[in-house]
Image 1: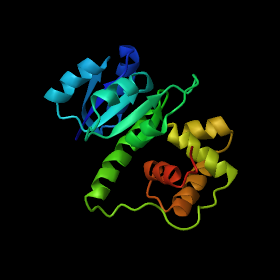
Image 2: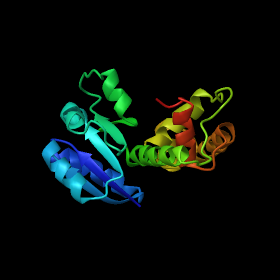
Image 3: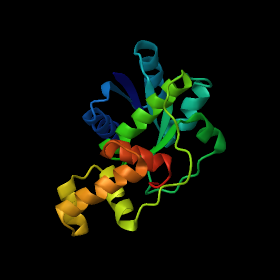
Image 4: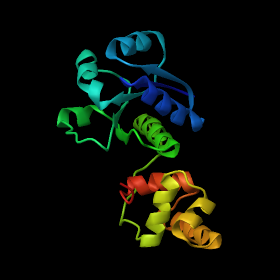
Length: 195
């Protein structure tokens, strides 16, 4: 199991992110810190494997921790303009919006953990070859799946039958060479079909 640290000035947002992450069952504990000093104390005491860091605190945190071994996922607010410095991007393993669904956060954690295993000799591979050709409807369904919607919710949202959703999902599984919905979303992210 994974221990995660969420560093965000607004503790309410930090709690929401921690709650969403906990929903996946991928983590054992989510620690919250509202400033770099609190984060520093937690990192000394707790075994943290992944850090979710708000953009507001990123410069201060990365100055304090010039070489942290913990993978960092940067939290950004898509509703406000922001500019990411190349040096910041280089230090982060992932960029996630504050509005990310529990599924998206789970995929981020799984991808970070998978990348760390890969560097230790795992057989996880990035896709090779031509990008799979998904229809517009299949891409829309994949986006809905990435937001954590059920087959029934997707059918109602897109005004199509439940059987049609299931058929599209089976085609997506084949085209993306995936086993299930979560793996399909991960493959969609790897192939940059989902943005």
